Length: 257
Image 1 (tube, rainbow, N blue to C red):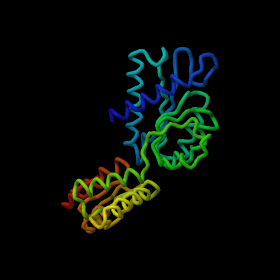
Image 2: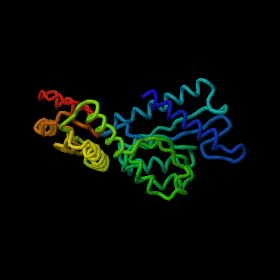
Image 3: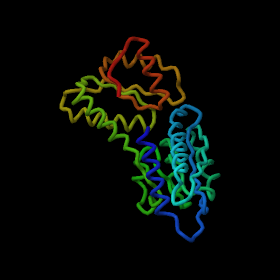
């Protein structure tokens, strides 16, 4: 978390330092203040991810306490989108003309829905949390306002799985993942690492879940019945905690990544 906040602060500072003209009027910028917008799930199935926004706001408070950026204080407008693309877009529209930059857009569906907003409105987006391939598919000229630090889902799952095979001795691997691009791209990475292992490990089961689900006892049982010694988890923080709890209830304690 500390490294994440430092990264957000560093990227934000770089954008502010190098992007604010000295004379021209810029939305969200005055002689004393820079306004940054943040739409994130503070409620709903991914609410725990909203902690990133609270951390970012706390870091802005810290920057302000030591003088701000180029003499300007950072004001954070924080809005709840409930992990819902329609609400997120509505929040962004409300921020238009009021903020200098948007920080921490969260969720692949939300990133996809908002992918053209930043170029069309000339608003920098700093550290979006979603499938980075959304941005990779856009023409380069439409990425001028987008600053990404989040890893590719496929690459991340590939590296974690390869590590578990090489360093943790994993032989039978299961994936518990969100039933959307998040979980499905993780599956691609897991399969890639297993293929590269040359028979040292195998994928025994993919157990998907819906983001609206809370009762995960059946999912935990399916994972246990698969015989997996390692479970790769691609979930919201809430569902990750719930599945670990349910596995423990039935005495199933595999390696968890």
